[in-house]
Amino acid sequence: MAKPNYSFEKRQRDLAKKAKKEEKRLRKAAGPANPDGTENPDPAAPPPEAEVKTQD
Image 1: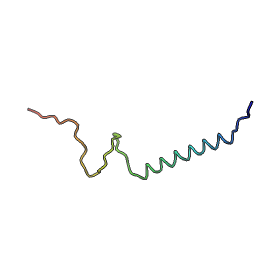
Image 2: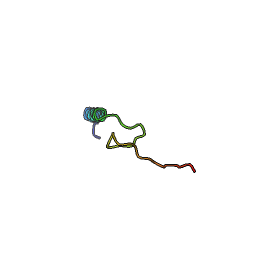
Image 3: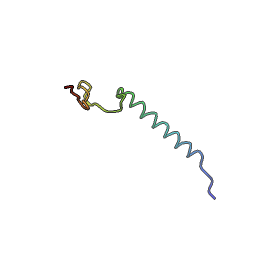
């Protein structure tokens, strides 16, 4: 039976952790996200109106 290569597994975990940290850093550097999770490409543009209700 083959012996497990623990140092390879540790290196893979460390690389994954480093990549995840870098992605998070890039997201933070890109700017704040909208709290509702939608993307608005033009920050100066008003948010899209979902449904306009009129009163009679």
